[in-house]
Image 1 (cartoon, rainbow, N blue to C red):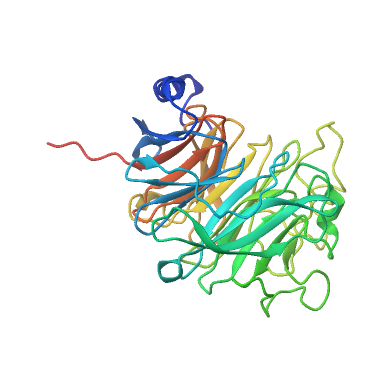
Image 2: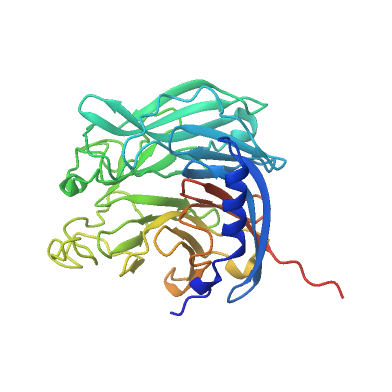
Length: 389
């Protein structure tokens, strides 16, 4: 399908960001830059809310319009009233190693009253490094975390610096789903006793939900297995369907609907190939393994993902918005309302803003993105106002 935005549109906003970065201090700072871009169904305004961030990985809007942003190097900041805060204190100990560091942020289902949030990050321990999840309370002024508790630590650490995952999605019942990659050791994705290569499911306090499929055999935290490195995860707030998006190798990036006890095939089946060009496993399908909802070949290197349910863009209702590191774009997958099949794909902003690491829908229906760069930015996509007649 032809790209909606040609790469030759690289121009104004990247130049503005570069100039402001030169003039800035080491601390992230607010900027104002806006560009209007047509899409297939609606014209959008893309605004740079902040720049100067160190490889931002997760973005999470709060109910009052404040935005939390994680930096992979181990810093959590708040964007409020056009200003980026100093680092929030009280974080758990983060071991920034390879692709790991401070990763995702998610609000507890009762955040409005509890102020509880969840963080995913890489930690150090026996055997090397692995993915962990912590719960903490954000102070009312947003300057610190209190009551910080590590509620999960994966059961096998290694020195490999790849495929930590890890995206978090919180269900309406308060439980949380999160992802861990295969840690660069593909066979681990098929080991039922290993947390790697999986979507996992916990109660908010770290205990095991009674409906987990492996509670009677294998690692009790597991929800689904056979995932290579899922860095996108979201729950459709209308249907309750859980979606994930994961990196393939050379091709074979996948969108899946992880279901309890199902196996999504990696590395036994795949639509991609090894980076050497060699075939992966036994082909693209086999009995006992689930097929993806959608896949990309060649790879787009997907980052975060959001199911769009908002008032600002009714044209996108129920669609999947997927950030892409490769080609530096946002991909919109138009889903059929009844079957859930992908009807079409639209590629937005290709090459305009950098590597899109995370995507979230704000309370007002705008779309938030972060760019995984040395000079990372927070972007806001809103509907272009109708002209005044």
